Length: 558
Image 1 (tube, rainbow, N blue to C red):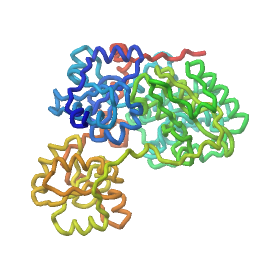
Image 2 (cartoon, rainbow, N blue to C red; image 1 turned 120 degrees about the vertical axis):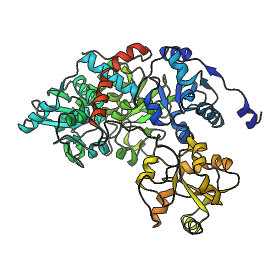
Image 3 (cartoon, rainbow, N blue to C red; image 1 turned 90 degrees about the vertical axis):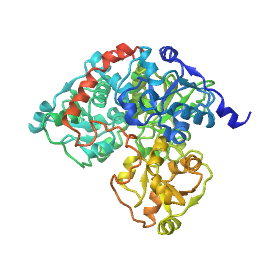
Image 4 (cartoon, helix red, strand yellow; image 1 turned 30 degrees about the horizontal axis):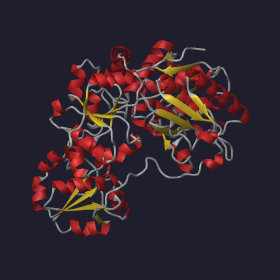
């Protein structure tokens, strides 16, 4: 059967009730919401994975690694008038996925059938964090209490459990960056005196709660508490945040390389905890034999991005442990899949530390995942240095070099389109470039009719050229009267060649809906938005109860 005929066949439709039944039964299913991030964040099902139509070819290969997995595609056509789901489903079929369906009625169908909808992003992890706090009564201190302790010169450490780049944007005074998966491995070196108080913070609540409860579960002797409501709570209390700090756990030699006795003790504790939570320990010999018939298997290296880049196991992606727990909807889009974790050598020539992977696994198991970690992997196996995520297969399209583009722009008959993210465009783009969203293509091209009327050649660009190269065939089909070219290497290559760049929101042909502005990121969010976000988090446990598909089981004290 020809590809064109396959693309014309009707797509199967599945009901919301059937999707919820599969989730409750812990069957493998990917409920894929193909809207852009901002509309997705306004309301969506709990386990919907946001995979924008505009990035489908880039992200589907690593987020949906098994081609015959059950995929249910949804949008909100009733509200926005765009039938993104059908376009995305057919594009997935063209990419080789063989079990693709449409959600009956889209988002409206989900709600009409009694399905619960949630706001914001990374909601499975955030709602789980709230459930952990409710059931385990995770200790916490208010911003005023922590500030008083700092001012009194209390023997204490403030450990920031976010990514390092988030910490650098804003941090609590005296705070140090110790991303979540590092806490159990590093805490003894950072607070060797059992009397030293340990405070864990993030920007909001989830990583503070999970980081603090990690140390409680791990059994550190120190008094430990979360900074209640993180940097949001600190700001709402009227206290100033530090900006641009560079204090990292690796600055402390003993934390960067724990002693053999410290490591052995931490490994034993972490692995007992993971096994008690229901995670499976795999021998080192299993690392290259992880495929299971009919199962999606995600392979994640939970170390820091820098460690991963220096050398990792072939076939494993990079998902720093704390962020993996925080972003399960991104790193495991197929609910019911199997997740296999590995950490790495803590010293040159030594096997994997065996702390970070099981500590991460113990949380994923509580979130209902079939999860395992690989123990004692020899250091010499960490040979792969390829970047993550992998580059997808790219279509053969006509390229233009930076030198050729410079000459073409001088002719006045070349239109330059930027198909990167809106944030990338605002930060840096080639002068004269118009930004558009591929998922909003028809509306963007209508906006650009005056420019298209005088252009003979249309050149596509983006940050590194990957997204624009993927989009060229679709743009070429939409613009049959123009010559379409792709800028080899994108804006990065242009800038590296000495080409001029500019910043700002000028020439936007699409609305900036590809990114949801989190109330907890940056330092200029309105106070009302910060408080509304906290109020929303407090209500998540009640929403979980109404949803009834989550499968979370919080580990009891023991």
